[in-house]
Length: 70
Image 1 (cartoon, rainbow, N blue to C red):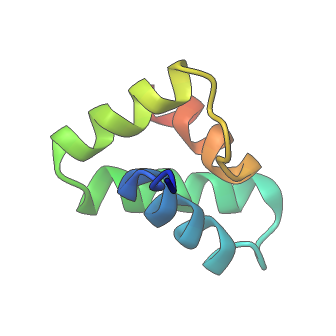
Image 2 (cartoon, rainbow, N blue to C red):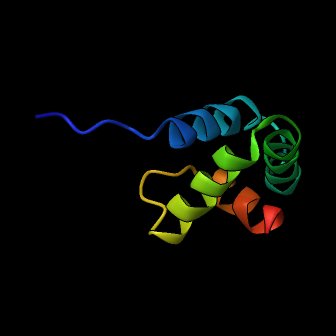
């Protein structure tokens, strides 16, 4: 049996990888900005809950972005 990756984790990590060329602080702000502008509130809530549950597999820029989203 294969565990599935939560879509919010996969999408947030993809955004972080695409913005990884920026300096860390600017990249985290850009990730948070993208999530804040374009994600449905339910998706943001699930991402925050996932981060609260341990953030396993989240890109470091996503973890920094989650702090900014709060």
